[in-house]
Length: 200
Image (tube, rainbow, N blue to C red):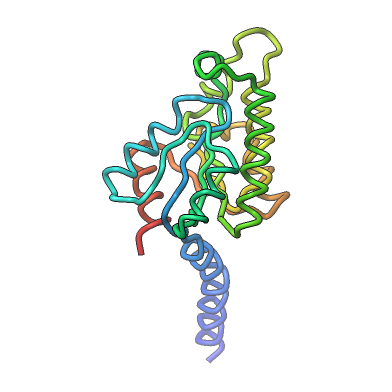
């Protein structure tokens, strides 16, 4: 009898430990259409764009999206339901767009503010791993980190390639701000994460 009671307690404990993790995984669901943008003009958003196309996700790709784009879509009667901002700064990308990291951060802050106003879910994504974070154009360059600070702590969900969190940068934000952190290792895993986020 004591043995049976012990087994019962073990089962209950396992359920209590397992259930919240499962519930959290299932609870992260986002709606379409999606606005896919950038903070830092890195090539990262292209990865998500490719998978959105394959998955048939309803999205708009605009690396320099502004708050006005959210307002205009709402006026059309077809408001965006979620916003993905891919962080990671590229001096080459910003040079081509003729913007500085300060411009990117200012635009992004206004974009997130309008998203909050409309009840649009915000996803902060870093999909290029630690090599993107280590790509300083000059000693002391921290534009990539600035883009992370501008977006991720303000997000509803974070999507991060696991090797980009080697120093627990995103884990710390997730824990401190209680923001769900979804990670992946390979590109095909990113496809699966996006599928789980957006498909019913």
